[in-house]
Image: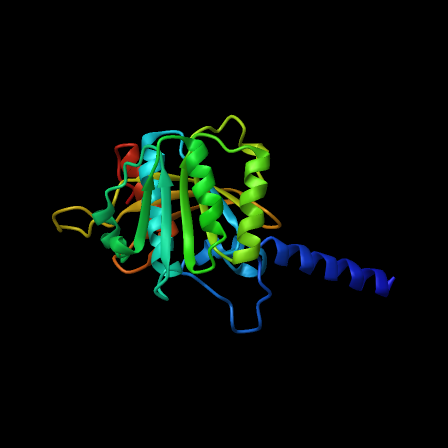
Length: 245
């Protein structure tokens, strides 16, 4: 029985490695600043060698996902690597990336005519080990197409972000994680004018070998910051038009 248990555990570890989850040594967890969200992943490590799917049915979901991904790119690109961003209808204003400490000139934007071209660019870019990440905006993604992208990231170690507009077939991909990012009202300090930091409702809808959950994060100028429970109550009370004392 012990031999079978050891074989089973070894198989689990191998599967996690194939899916982009690296084993973590004690005290050496590769945290990227997402706080509690990272505990949802195996080993409490954000999977970099994986495909992350973002459901962006509404325009506000797309805009919020762009900002959230920009915050992730600030960490993934900190070693000087570049990123490819492919789309047929990009709305992202490159200069806005600087708000998330991302240098726009290190993003290779590829605006093409068809989604077939987007998927071809995405697959080829994901094979380039010199890149930090690849972002692709598509309407839909088939099971076969998602498998091809996953095989590419497993060999290169590049992180893939797919912004997907069609949610009718969300179960038909092999994405390691599925997200939905929604905007929330920003919060300013009492008596201070202007707007607060960008804030999002982060729904982790699916995590392979992990635990889905709901979270509230904001970009606090230099990094992600978790919004504590008290702040969450204020956010929702603002949406309802009243304030909790």
